[in-house]
Structures are given as C-alpha cells and as structure tokens.
Image (cartoon, rainbow over all chains, first blue to last red; front, top):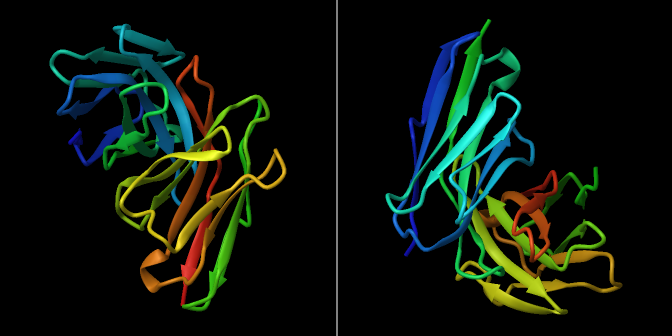
Length: 113
Length: 113
C-alpha cells in the first residue's frame, strides 16, 4: 500500500531564505507526482506536476525534483516571501491514468518578514 | 484559467439528514473525483468517476455515499444519512487523461451537528 510522508511537518524561516521541502513515497511505481499549496480553510492549488519519466519541473521560484527509484521528491522554494506561508502537500498518483492521488500530511511553512 | 466550482462553500446539517454537495468540473475534462479532508488529517480519496460510472472507490465510500453526473455539467456527491464523523472539507477535482494532473475546487466545508 502506497504511503506518502512529508518532512518536516512544520518549518519557520526568515524572509529571503531558500528552503527545501521533502516528500517520500514507499512504492516507486507511480504515474506522476503533484505538489499543492493549501491556505488555511481553503482548497488545493496545484503548483507543479512531475510525470514519472521526468526529473524536475520549474515554475518561477519553485523547483520540484523527482527521484522515482529512491521514492523521493523535493520542492525547492527560492527567495521565500511571507506570501509563501501555507501548507504544502505532496501527492502521488499510482497506476494508470485513472489512479487516485495519495497525499502526504503536508509541511506547514511560515515565512517571517 | 478554467476552474472547478463547488457549492455551497459551507453547509451545516443535522445528523441523519441527507446532503448533496455540488461541483462543476472543467468542461473538457473526462475524469472526476471526490476527496475529503477531516480537520488536521490527510486529504483522502473517496471516489473517481469516468464515462458515467464509478471507476474506483475507497473503503470510506460506503453505501451512504453516492455520486451522479445528472446533466453533463454538474457532478454531485450525496450523503444519505450524515454522521458526526462526516464533518470534513469535501473537494471535487477533475482531470484529463493525457496530462494526468488534477484541478481541485475550493471545497465545501460540511459540518454535521
């Protein structure tokens, strides 16, 4: 059974710092991996999607990497800003195109001005 | 940018009552999903729907739950007899086969009293 773990559970950094959020999964036979942002009491905003054949994806200050064989993904946030404060969720999609997403519990990020 | 729309944003219901949560997926998407998030816990898969039928469901999705696509645009989740433990944020999502990524709605917060 696929399990997704995110470390750390919470992170507080000063504005401007570069940071890395970690995600690990137990079964490497994934279809893709998606990083989401969740603001308190709100929905899920997709940040980056990495297909199983890809190694990384970039969007602005965000870079996500995928090492499928070791069951790991990282989300790198450059030059963090207070507006980046949110919970970041990692989710993997097993099997074929209809496979459901399996989520980690998230990393709660706080960026201090 | 296309959005997944969910209504209502917040619903309070008495235990034992029936509720219907509504979603309008992105128009050219073929796959539809319901997920839920109990406060402080992981986002959990409930059900996926394709070609007018359920394609996959979790053990959470028991006989009190049902889904329907009544008119080709709406996608609904019905809970027949709500329990206190059904209190959660319910997310609708839709996706395309070829991209594999999901777009989530902003959620319906269901409170059962």
